[in-house]
Image 1 (cartoon, helix red, strand yellow):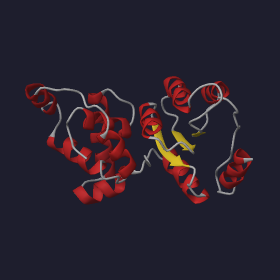
Image 2: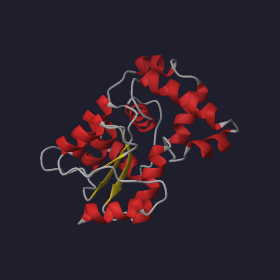
Image 3: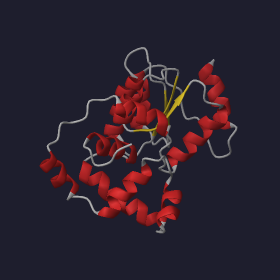
Image 4: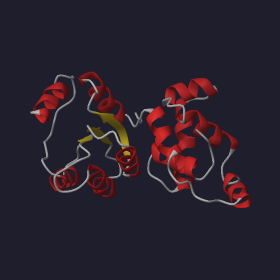
Length: 205
């Protein structure tokens, strides 16, 4: 019933079409990796595996496919698992139809829609990597001041156009710097870069 309701909501938006509905993680992986879907809307708790595990397999096969989570599980563990799997958005069961549609559309555009307050609480309670001051300074030296500045602004939950306006640079310049940050941190998304930066002590929330 929930899948049918969400399908109706999504298909009421011009330009959106639900390609398929999967009942298990394995089925979701099979469908998403063998067909060129624009975005995957994922539940965290699935009958055969976690949504994060399924998302990880999908991203491993098709790194460009954005994953939006919509689930009743609002635990910090689930949130961080989803982020580590490359989630573009994490919506709880209280999300409205409009919020679901917005998350899907923004994910397709490459944006990340994670509640910053929820993200900050989750990261604050995680064990950060023990890095000696000298090692941290060496790591910091790998990043330009602009890259670190963009990471700090990104941590405020702002999208690319807003970051660009705040820093007085073009949106494509922001994306260019973020691509370099993602490569240096050896991750796959802006959100994963933010997680890594916090855990490594590059920025603070």
